[in-house]
Image (cartoon, rainbow, N blue to C red):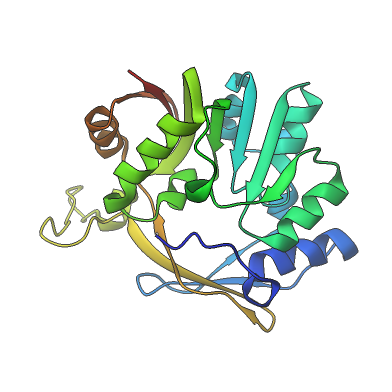
Length: 243
């Protein structure tokens, strides 16, 4: 799991966010993977308002209660909307440039931090992991470490709202069956690397997890997974509560 704090020299998404904030435009934020063709993240999308968010995101923001931790907060779009709702939120990101932009945009509490190395104190009622937030976990082998961290930082009765996608659709055959190599790595484990202009990021692991697998791991480590809502394309929002 590579969740180390970034420096500006290897922070392509942060640089793209900073450019867009400063000028209202940005170049291509390119995304590479050994498993997929080159893709691009529309930087403007990282600055969306509540009206432009996916329904799963809107639902999670409405359900978030008490003291909230927004993980991988990016430009701060979720944190800003939560503040508008009168809710208390701490926003964290491993990107120094993203944190700088969040503060300039008016996020009250934003810090460069790695979720897995935060102080082990029960402080939050809600943890938000949105925009395929399960990705932060990296690989299935890190699930135990993730749930142990949630036990440390969640107050009694606390909840994690996490969205993810089931990538099985990528393996669908013409007859509607799925051709997945069960002997190989889990099909939702993906490697990515980003580049913005001349700023190249390090490769990192990203986890897309189907709800059934998430439920099994949650149960194993003392949590219950609840399917809150399903999206239009194999995506879903889940609530994870301690038993």
